[in-house]
Structure formats: structure tokens, C-alpha cells
Length: 294
Image (cartoon, rainbow, N blue to C red; front, side):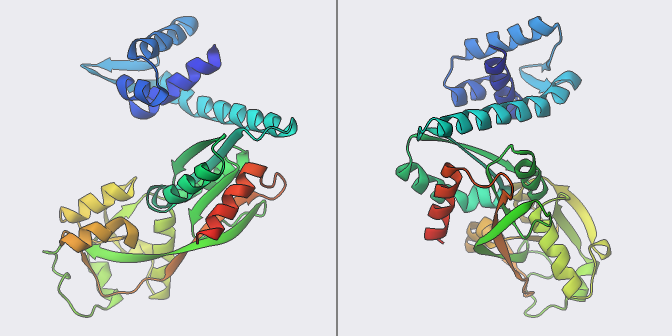
């Protein structure tokens, strides 16, 4: 019972919306609300603040959320291992991916894998590259996908795709119509950045070093937690951003964004797995699907 209550708690905590969580869990809203109430009653601790018509995590809820996620990931991993031990083909594919990969590159491969192995449950977690590395290291994910490289001796990695990073601005930005641009001019501009630990930020930092610049030289006006937030801020005129071409393709086509004439290096999408744990059969099959469609 407590595991099911924790699954419901995590679903609500991640969405901060009972109705959306109920829909994702294929449960009645009343059942989700009752489960949360029972969990809070059992431990005599409230996990959410009820603010107006919405909810938000309180301190106890914020402390419980990472613990619950880790416990549930371990349970899923144990179930997958037991299924494989008894020769069953059912199980769970535990995938963790960075935001760009999860949103714009991975879905078509997951669809192809589902067609090949419909009996395998797919669990996809999303974070920045540092989060992905940590999930693979602690066993919360069987396989991970990041931009760039993971510098950790316990991880194996393989290049599975390439992506182009580009600098973009709003069309009314003063640099938007310049046919050429010296990278040194970037230090005079405001940047919209992804958070520390993101693959996009790491690749930009390496590119700046190639131009003889450092991240510390830039004026960072905003530090945002997602590609979509960065794109929206730049469209609104917040400054320059380094972002994947796949994320801004629609905005470039419609004229909401303009690419700057500075070429950034390609970045590599890497598959990661733990050297000692290796890849379980489901993850092995998924990696084959990814490589066959590269």
C-alpha cells in the first residue's frame, strides 16, 4: 500500500495538480485525493500546502520527493531484474535523458522500441546532463542519454547521434541583421542560459574557450531550467541564447528568432550505462534500435 501511495504522491508532486496526476495514473481524482490524505494521516504530516485552488509542496513534501523517486526507481529496477531472472520478457526499460534529447530526439526511438517489444514497460525520466549521469551511477536508470561526454570512470558511453548548437536572438536585436560577427562582441551582450549541469551550457562553455573567451566574460541576464523557457525568453527579447537547432527550428522558420553568424561546434549525443552493471536485455535491445535508426 505504501509503495502505491508513494507513486501517487510523486505523480502529484511532479505536476502540482491532482487532476493531471489522476489522468496520468489512469485513476479517479477522488482516489488520488484519498490516497494522499491517507498517506498524510498515516504519518501525521502534511505534504502539500493548499493555496487557493492549487497546491504546492511544503518542506516535508520537498524532502520526501527525492527519497520517494529513488525508492520507486529501485523497486522498478528490482522488478525488471526478477522478471529477467525467471525468463520472462516483460519488464521495465528505465531510461533517463537530458531535456533536449527527451523532447526532440528520443521519442521516435521509443515508439520504434515499443513496436518491437510491446510487453516491456518504458519509464522515461528527464533532467539535465548531470542528473542523467547521477541516475545511471546510482542505478535509477538502466541507460542514459546526454549531450557531450560524461567524465566518470564507472560509465561506458557510445556516440549515437550528433546535434548542432546555434546562437539565436529576437529579430529586433541589434545583432540580428549583421552578416558577420566577431565572437569578442558577445561579451557586450546579455545571455539567456540553461542552468549549471546542462549539456547545452557545457558545450557553449567549450566553444567560448575555442574563441579565447570564458563563460565568466558573458553577461548572464537569465538562468532558466528548460529549453522551452530559454526559447520563449529570447523570443521576447531577453538576449542571446545557445540552443539546439532542433529546439528552435519552428521559431527560425516563422521569423520569431534569428540565427547569429557564429558557428558553434557540433555536439554528440551519448548513450551511457554502468560498466559493472552493464545493460539489461531491454536496454540492450533499445540501444540496438537507436543505433539502427541513427
